[in-house]
Length: 77
Image (cartoon, rainbow, N blue to C red; front, top):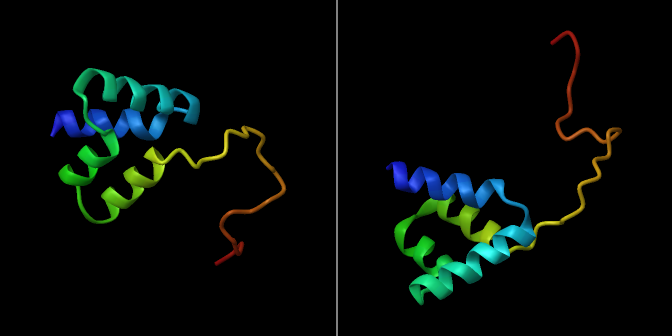
């Protein structure tokens, strides 16, 4: 389980350019596709999340719109 947790931590915490380097290095070292290996070792929602991240479609924009609410809130309830 520790190995799996480490992989998750690495995948979700790296910015897209670094993740692309990790994917390329994995291919060099193991002659395997990291996304395919993740698909074979995971399932369900976790698999969908990790594969989505490995496809490197995340924005590299680090600017955050402070005026935009992600979760609607109601005070007093």
